[in-house]
Length: 108
Ligand SMILES: C[S@@+](CC[C@H](N)C(=O)[O-])C[C@H]1O[C@@H](n2cnc3c(N)ncnc32)[C@H](O)[C@@H]1O
Image (cartoon, rainbow, N blue to C red; front, side, top):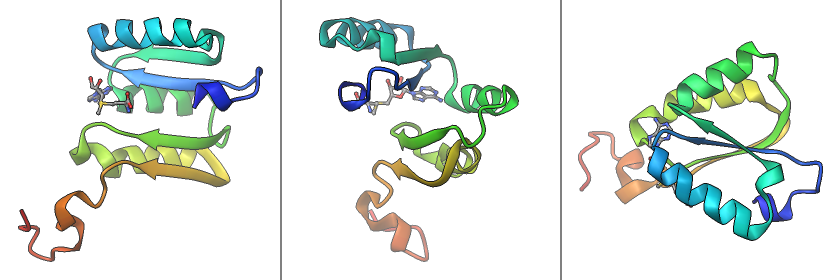
């Protein structure tokens, strides 16, 4: 995503695990996109809340969520505030094994 951002674009990357963060930073460097990536170490929900408190509501065009499925509802509510009207929020694996369509929540 950072590769296709314009030079003045900014991607905020949330990660709670320091080791994963080091790996990610290494690849941002290698790809030449470090200047476009604002890395936030900590729990994503805390980061998103602090972004809202810092006046960043409606500033973002796009969000991609790929962690902790049980937190998706909360991430979605926070991202609705951060992503502008007409922006896009993508949640990875939402249809996981069809559970979302199972009224008893028991499929698989
Ligand atoms: C499936 S991986 C993401 C992979 C990434 N989308 C990619 O394509 O490289 C999930 C990551 O989310 C991180 N993570 C899990 N829970 C988190 C949380 N509450 N806050 C921030 N990061 C979290 C994990 O440490 C892990 O690195």
